[in-house]
Structures are given as C-alpha cells and as structure tokens.
Image (cartoon, rainbow, N blue to C red; front, side, top):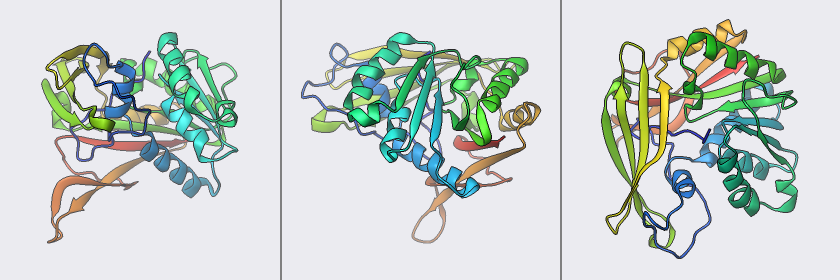
Length: 300
C-alpha cells in the first residue's frame, strides 16, 4: 500500500516541505504528480531520521546500521537513511509495486550509485518480511500501521516487527491523537514549492465511527489555477489510542515501551504558544492538546 499520511494540524508540524527535485512546469491538477506532492507536503524525512538516529545512539551507545522502513511507499525515508553514512543499509517493505516503482525511479534514481546499492526495495507484506530481519531499527511511520483494525491483527504485526529486530534492536512508531483526531473535518495548508510551484494540501477526515474507531481519511491538492486533485490518497484506518498501542507492544513481547512527547514553544514571556518546539523527550505525562503527534520506541 502507499506510504500513509501524516495528520497536519498538530502541536507541531512534522510535515514541512522536504527536499526534492524541482521542475519548471507549474503545478496544476493535470501536470502535478501525487507522489511528489505527498513528499513535499506530508513527509519530512530529514527530521524523522534525525530523531531515529539520535535516539538509537542515545539508547544503545552506537549508530544504527540496518534500518527497515515498513509500508515504505516511495522509499523516501530509506533514501535519507543511506545518505547519512556510507555504512548504512536500508530495506523498504510495501505491497504496492507501482508506488515502489515511482520511488525507485525518482528517489533511488537521485542517489549516488553507492548509496543506491544500499537500498533494497522489497514487494512484501510486513507480516511476512522474509529475510529482511536482524535489523537495528524497524520503522512504522505516518500511522501506516493503523490499517490493522483489530487487536489480534495489530499484535501479530508487532510480533513480526519484534522478530525482525536484532537482539538490541528498536521499533520506532509515530502516533496521532487528541480530541480533533475524532472529528470529521477538512484542514487546508498552503505549501510553497521551489520556483513558485505552490499548492494547497487538504487533509480530509471524512468519517469517524466512535463505536468501532474506524475512520476514513483523504488527501486532496488544490492549485493556483483553481484546479483540484481530489482523493489523491485515501486511507481506511482504526484510530488507536496511545494506551492501546503501549499495551499491545508489551503483549507482543517488547521489553520496554517509551513515549516521546513534544515540548512547547515559548513566547518572549516564557509562556507556551500552543506550537511545538520540535524536541521530543521521554515522558509519562502528556498535555491534553486537541491534536498532537508523538513518537514511540519499543525495545526488543
């Protein structure tokens, strides 16, 4: 399946425009590529890998080498990983071959030959990763794992991720929550691209069932010429709470589960502004923000 979407309206915006190739053609619904738009508006692989790299080193006293990106989509994160150090190896798992093919052409294609040789894009179900094991890090980001809608399914995935780790490996996830996560709403955010290639990102929480926790979310893109790319991406998820995820990770056999909560940005008077400062630290207490993104680590 394609890499999944990050909720845009949070205490912090992880999704800042990412570095990418730029063309001179203006963005319109007819000329734009949905995968490129996604990477520009949703992903910030630089900051994500910053967190993974620093956290692993802090916990294990060495740099991670082998990283697996589950639900990898275009492999954007895997490509960022191999750029960091010549020793790094990345493995991307996904079942959507056309999306992976796009990433192989556009993301792997922009790497240097040595870097490209260290990325392995595999058309595989994350529940049966095969020989993509003995990993220092396994990543499930952008809430991709929410496609598992029952406790048994989610526990099975977590067990598969744990079995894929080296003895000192760490499973990294992100999580989205807060009262607004249960709202049916559309949020729009302007994105400034290179050379004036601007567009508007629309996050559409189209439906939410409070009895089952099931939700449907969509991404649309709107362009300066008034055209719109409707339903560029659509997701059918279960909205999982942090306590549920922590419990299931423990049930799957992880020895330690830690939530990394984002700090508050302060104004000149030292008062919280309501925005995040981009710094995530281990915490057992969070604030009742209407929308937030946190990271989770699960140690084997």
